[in-house]
Length: 262
Image 1 (cartoon, one colour):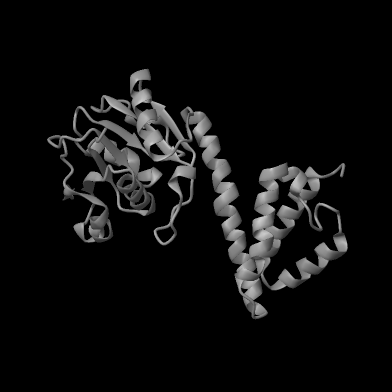
Image 2 (cartoon, helix red, strand yellow; image 1 turned 180 degrees about the vertical axis):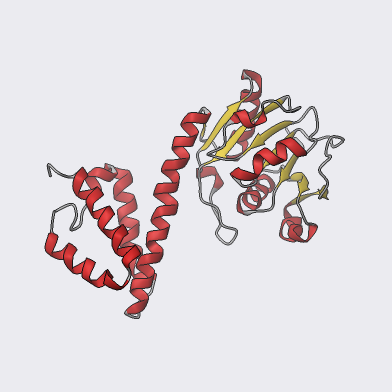
């Protein structure tokens, strides 16, 4: 069944949601942005009759679902300041923001649709492989969100706000923190004329092994085997970068403390 979906936002998540909705034959009917100049890359993804608007009074639009694909911190302002269609189900897509952000507003049907993935406009993702976590303001709304979520991915589960916050924190540690360390590794490689691609097989094997046997069993390296001689050599290399040296030492301690009996 074709439903009318509007998207508020023009960032990475909004872009990939728009792509996926077009792939499923349900291109978005409305795009709400702060500046229409930022909507150009979305035009090929929209319904032929789609509305692109910067207005905050959206109450007269006949939309079934409104997706708030904006930063977690922007959601409270939007639900307070925007007038949304009364009959629409309004969903935010944030991991850290509670469903309670909608309470005390005029929005009657609301919930959460949180795709657990990292999104960048320059990198295609297989949306059908992404787990989606949902929450609804009522059982009926939650069922509606589930049906919509399953049109995007077959992997849809219910998770309350407290659980979703912990999931989001785990995702930040596993994804964002790891990627920051990749950047540190890249800077070390650049010093000896190598690029990050030389670590591709290692990074892939580490991730695959952690998933296959669990991160604790997959842990290797000098910290896990208590090889202080190697650790000291690495710390010496990092002498000129005290902030990275401190992170190295803290992570070494974390690994060592979690493998005391190994």
